[in-house]
Image (cartoon, rainbow, N blue to C red; front, side):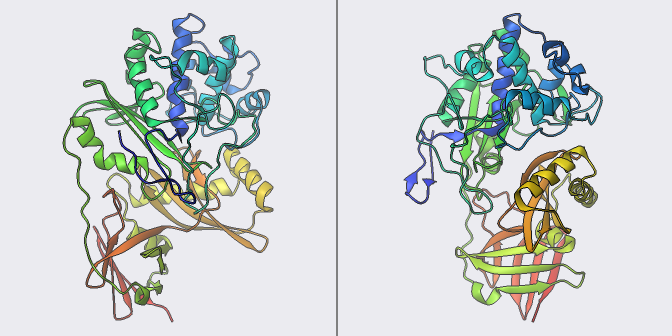
Length: 494
């Protein structure tokens, strides 16, 4: 185990192996374990329908089974409330009951936070205990008698010391003083703990010490195929051997208002657990896993970052550069790095070339979905508009400023006018137009940071080695962006 960097920049407090992080959506693995614990006790079955277990339900999701909720095939799309909305149990049940289904239950995979909150409501109803108390009593205890953390907000609380999160906007994240009620995230998020306790809990889960050995084997069994080589399991995603050379299960959590992200991997063949968390957007846990995960899973030496030394006149490069096709680049010096911001589809595509598996048409489709969302053409879009207007006032003109591939998701950047203000943000949607993640406001549009690599050329500032394979160069009033598809030249304005 190891820890690096700062848990709090203002106090110069370092991260340690005892630092607590919010684990976000990894909470879903704990909710799934609680469901299987109830199955072990005979209090419910995976083929029970939600409406049977919660007779108050009379909306379309009442027909979904527990299994479909676990595997994200209930037809629910997206979420039922913002993370820090003070939402009570009955209000959450009503909000989920009123959601439209994007597909018939069992027919389609659609990741849904609302589905896992509905599972928490089921646990709350059939366990004879509250959802939080049931997890604290039956799921969080570790084999050595300790308890694996607690909740970031509310009780039972995760202990200190906690890392302070830093958002992409540059602001610090929510520190755990939200008073609740917490049913916007119950079941789908909310837990926090150290990485060493997360590792201990994961090993206990899959070795039959949290649920029965039969249920532990069931949780590790792939359920619904998502894409080739990847299937939804039960609170986890199952991968075949094409990534690490052997099958594994993984789950991840992050985003939201806290500013943490975490990843968790279980390699059954070797009973290896990999857990990582980050409180800074520059090096996310998922990006770090992409770099070192294969070596950790296979017991090989970790890759060593390569650093290209170089010098460049960054101040001379600063300015605005325009493409003949309409887009532009804004170049500035920030924190001893060159920050290049792209505006317009042509500029964004040059700076962030889409990776293999994501086509320009995929990016255009995502952008169209975001446009429809913000126009209020869907139930989810009307909720987003209401949330925006509740905070900022009436929503005016909406400008879509570009779409990038960010990890395994797409992000469309937008500027939204509200009165005299222009508010920048981004949305990441699933294939049915449901919100997977969003940040409004955000600090900057589609921006990549560079360091000098010699001869007035710059490479991405990328300790993990997974940033886009691009470089930028400056000469004679021109900026050239070179990527896998070739070079794109822009001319300095003014």
